[in-house]
Picture 1 (cartoon, rainbow, N blue to C red):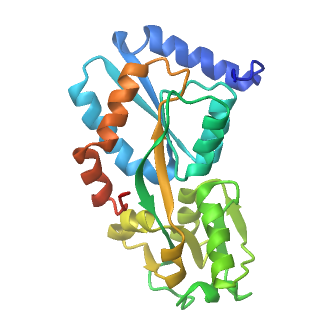
Picture 2: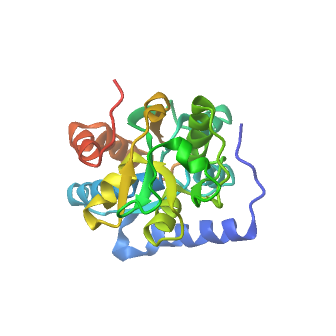
Amino acid sequence: MRRRSMLSAAMAALLVATSATACGGGGGQRVLTVFAAASLTEVFTDLERRFEQTHDGIDVRLNLAGSSRLAQQIVEGAPADVFASADTEPMARLEKDGLLDGPATPFATNTLTIAVPRGNPAGITGLADLADPGVTVVVCAPAVPCGAAAKRVQRLAGVTLRPASEEADVRSVLTKVEVGEADAGLVYATDVHHTAASGRVEAVAFPEAAEVVNTYPVAVPADAAEAASARRFVDLVLSEEGRRSLREAGFGLPR
């Protein structure tokens, strides 16, 4: 199936701007555009640096957001050379529409945890506490992988949450907890792993989380302008170097 030919004005402008940059900007460098789930921010920033060090003339540009939003941008024609999703469902939509250059490859796994402000002032001990009307809880919107995982874990635990807000990506949930706008938030374990050193948030583990595992796939979109470089970037993600970076960030690895 061919991509939709009708693009929004904003998306068309993005296409023009990106093409101009790729063709003439950055001192003649070619641009490799990588769409990646927000939870991959630290890992892919590290891989961006590593890739550029070994590939002269390539400028890696990261577009970090909720996976469903990124997938929709690709459907609408946004230029992407690599897509790394926080769950299989957004990637499956692209594959079904013929928008991938070959099958996606799983490269990481993640589970949810409860993020609370330092000191856990609301005394959260498990998922059931988040259903207390006196607790302000934030989650991801159901359309994005972290929100879908939150829905699944609630069904598994027999708990119904009434969140104060549903955010566009997992980092937005974490930020609300960090700044004290929420007593708790459902985020990925890797997000708390990253921010633990700051001391602003803590993790409260709960047993049901182990039953809901998100698998992260990576693929090259069918219309990738830098397909050869994109495949080399995917190779880096799947390499032992990439796996080491993922492990250090707290991700699990598919078997």
